Image 1: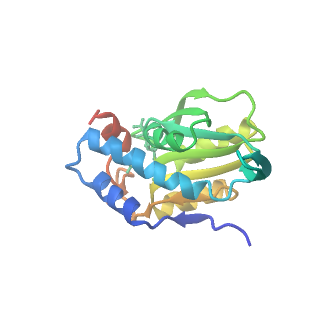
Image 2 (image 1 turned 120 degrees about the horizontal axis):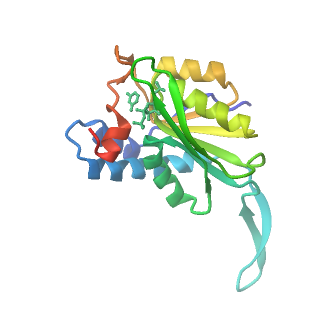
Length: 210
Ligand code: PRP
Ligand code: URA
């Protein structure tokens, strides 16, 4: 059976944190705390299907079977807002490598502009978690996934917080091999291509630059 292209995570703790993030009255400190918290909760689901290998472990009493992850995990946040979620993911996978992808959306054209890339030297064998809380038009995440693939990435999962049908459609048209794990599929976009109801500008709210 093939994995679904979009999984929406439904859990009371995720739903509660998402409501706090959506609330325009939430301050930056609380926004940061809940974005990290929701990322920790979602990490369990997004890594559910990463390959594992059986190893032998010696307990103080006897040998038993244990588990290890044979492929390195690479956390690939799209700057800036992805950094906030990446903090939570790294709390769950402290030995993960980080691939930074600096992109911003041009406010007029909505085209993604790449301004920074810093990747591990070789991640062809890695399990990559592409991270961006917002999937609006899909321009940023499509470009980010293409950059990762151009450097040899073969196995990518997209960890997202709020998506919408046009973004999902565009992303899967460009990258049908990458599953999206999200907490919400909102109805659509407004005239400025902001997700509605959404949560506003995730980067500005996380970094207090509103
Ligand atoms: C936001 C968000 C996504 C992108 C989503 O970034 O964090 O990366 O927009 O929109 P798209 O799907 O239409 O591309 P933004 O450009 O605001 O940069 P910032 O995180 O640095 O504020
Ligand atoms: N970027 C955001 O931060 N929020 C949106 O709703 C759309 C793009």
